[in-house]
Structure formats: structure tokens, C-alpha cells
Length: 487
Ligand code: TYD
Ligand code: MG
Image (cartoon, rainbow, N blue to C red):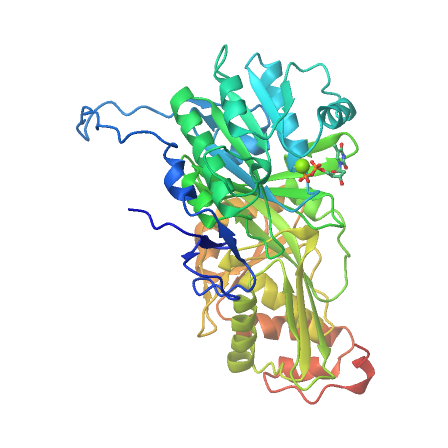
């Protein structure tokens, strides 16, 4: 029997407590606990219904005809790449992203593409009026596409409308935080409402076979707002990312029950909406600052697609007691590890220096294969020794300082060659395997110390900076010289 009286629900993690508290015991967040109706959860099952007797269903053997999930390609190749080949019938997809990143733009373009291909596509906006959505569609040149449009927030009304006539192939709900269901008494936007509305829409998708896309807001620390439980309820979670000042937008699968989670889709925000970027390497390398120290091109792979991106480092004498370690677009822990290996095995003393590392173009790299490129950029900046502009780097640095081979070396080399690069620094074992039929000049790197010595030599030839001479001899660098202490 459900307990009567108020319940208090954490708006961050969905934990339920019996009394109000300033801090949620479950997730540690402050001021996230809000009173919600006690009967709310119980009512989700259906208000006032008598308990139903269970209906027996047929059990099936594991062996049998495997049905490939019937998919509906959106016609937007970068989106299909991330979903794993299109929308699956009856599936629910959550798209999260910062306000203004382009979620509504992407989804109205998707709905229009499907509608133009002759499928029934419905776009429900809970945030904007119909006129606003129309205005955007007009700007995007999509006004003629037969998308069915409404500005509604009541889940019951929406489902009643959608079940009339032919079942839609795609339903976009923009956004789930604006929806509310009669089954729950809490205010729209609360955890219980979001969960209740999502549950009703998921049930509709499974029953009707329509693919439903829910738009989700993102909190300031990058989580999709509302209970994490919605992320567990849906079939796929996509995150739409980008840096404010850049026009690139990256769509990434965080979870996908029907496809890979390591593929990314790359878009560019233009005056006429989102444009697909079929060859992102060209885009990420388009603003390269050739010949300056502290930059290295990383030959990466995102899913099945090779992707070249520039890593930029700045190593500058610190004025603080604890030097700064700042990183954008890469893992802070991996940076710490690479710095530790440089100190321990290569004689590069960095304790007197601030270190900044940035991945150009607003991309976020997760591969350990970026270690070698990051290390090269760091040492290049420290020694004021530019790396060869036609070189790419990849390889994983182990704690012993050895360079470990990484997957898909051949694909990385091929992409570098395609984009006009002339040489590659790669793990020694990969040189023989993948490099046999590569036209690039390959330098196999056995250990990180070899790379450091190579870069130090390069700097020495350029006129000899104090740090460099020390590095090329493999000994510790002296105290930071005053002339670079402007940072
Ligand atoms: P929007 O799709 O409304 O973002 P979200 O739904 O994620 O909040 O996109 C809003 C931004 O995109 C806005 O700052 C203007 C920009 N934009 C363009 O640059 N070009 C366009 O064609 C459109 C429609 C929007
Ligand atoms: Mg929007």
C-alpha cells in the first residue's frame, strides 16, 4: 500500500525521500529536492483503474528467424550514420544539447526530409508557437514539405491526435520538459512529469510502431535534465554538441540499442540551416596555423571514419604555486598521465610550467591513440620547436613510456595521404603492418623518449633554445627562463 502524504523527489537524480532536505543523499546535489504528489507514481499505471488480471502470452525459443530491425533512413547521411542506419520502427530516441545548439533545426530538417520522401512526419512543439516553427521552416526553405505541425503540451491530447488516421512514421516532441500528462499531478518540468510523459510516449511508440524523437534540455554540467531514468527508458540517446564560437556541430550517440555508439555525425550551422559535412578532416584542419610550435595533427578514428584534427598545446612558465593544467576536448586524466610519463621517462620537467591543451574545432577526442600527438604538441611548445607541417601522429603512450599500437592504422594513414600529408609518426609495430603499402614517410616510434629527442634535435637546428639543448641530451631542463614568463 502506497504511503499517503507528501513525497520529496530530487530533480537531479530522481531519488525519493520522506522529508525535505537541502542536500540529496543519493547524488550529493544541493537544493534539488522538491515536493511532489505522493500518489503520482502510483497513478502512472492509470488513475482509478481496477487491478487487471494478467493476460498469458506465448513464449518463444531463442532460435528462430532473426528479424533485422526495420529501419527508416532519414535521408540525412550524417544522422543515419549516428543512429546506425536510420530510425527503427517503434523506437524512441532522446536528443540532448545546449539551448541554441540547433536541435530544433536538425529535427525540423529531418521531419521535412521524411515528409518529402512520402512518409507521415509530425512535429509537436511545446516551446514555440506554430508561427515561429513556420518562420524557421521558411528560412530553411522547407515550407513546402508536408510536415504536420502543432504547438501542444498535453501528452494525452497528442497521443489521441496521433492515433487518428495513418500511423506517423516519425513524431518529434520538442521538448520532453514542456510535456505534461494528466496521470501526474506535479508541475510540468518536474522529474515525475517528465518521466510520466516519457513513459506515455514510449508506450505509444511501441504500440503504434512510430519512431518518436524526444528533445531533451541539458543542464549546465552537460547532463540531460530530468531524471537519468529517462535515458534508461529510451532506446537511444544522442547528444548534439558544439562550441559556441564554432559553426561545427557534432552529433554523438551516447547510448544506442540498435547501432554503434562510437560514430559521430558532423554538421555545419549555416544561414540556411544545418549542412552535412561529409569530409570533416578538411573542415577541422582548415584553420591551421602552419609552422608554429605547439601544434600536432592527430590521425584519429571516430567509429568507422578516420578524422584528422589538430591538437594545440601551450607550455609556459608558471607564476602560480601549483601550475595550471587546462584541457579542452580531451581527457584531463590522460593529459596528467602523458605529463607524468614525460617527466618520469623522458627527463622533461614540467612542474614549473602551466600546461594548456586544446583540440581545434571544438571536437572532443576520447581515443587513447591521441597520446602521441598530445605529447608531440606539448614538447614542441616547450622547446619552441615547430613540428613538420606535413606530419600526422598517432599511438598510445603506456606508463612505461613505450608507444603501443592502436586499431585501424591503415585507415588513419590513408586519410592522411588523401589530405596531402607526407609523413607519419606511429607506433613501431604498426609501421611494418599497416605501412607496407603507404606512400607516406613513416617514422616508427618505439618509446616516448625517442620522440622527445627527435623534436629537441629539430629545435636545436633552428637556433637552440635553452630547454631544447637540455632535452636533446635527455637531461632535466633548467629553471624557466624569464623571457617567456608573460603568461
Ligand atoms: P535551434 O534549432 O532553435 O536550437 P535549439 O532547438 O537547440 O535550442 O537553433 C538556434 C540557433 O541556430 C540560433 O542561434 C540561430 C541558429 N540558426 C542558424 O544559424 N541558421 C539557421 O538556418 C537556423 C534555423 C538557426
Ligand atoms: Mg529548440
